[in-house]
Length: 140
Ligand code: CMP
Image (cartoon, rainbow, N blue to C red; front, top):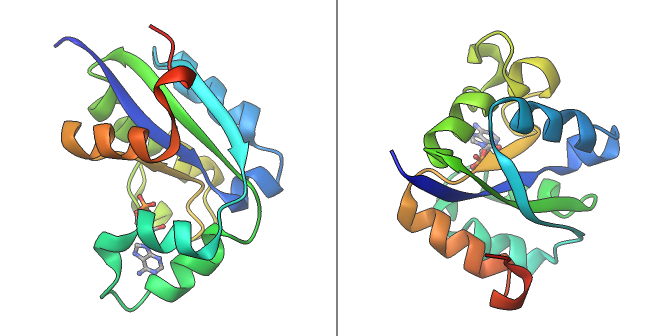
């Protein structure tokens, strides 16, 4: 597998509990490198656009309100097979189903307040990186 880039969010429940460094340590231990990162506060419109694919789901309103409730940290992670490696380190969406040692098993509070987001495919990774980062912010 080649070197890939993926997009990651450290969500409000985690930034609020000062877990940014602990989560980054999990990524780094798994061989993922943070190649771009910033702490931002989303507007409601930005959250609704980013999660537009879920707009018909019953939890959409709750998801968007949660994502604007505190600052988030958006990141680009790079490494061998980064998209699937990141998803492995995050663990299942529902922390009750997440494997031991994963970020969501250790830190997530619920299926909604699940500490991290990661892209699910190369196409979404490219779209999500472009949504949050300009070319000038991306090194190499
Ligand atoms: P994420 O990987 O950011 O992608 C969509 C998010 O929707 C997901 O993580 C969860 O945080 C959230 N989500 C999924 N299912 C539910 C649910 N049943 N209730 C609330 N939020 C959910």
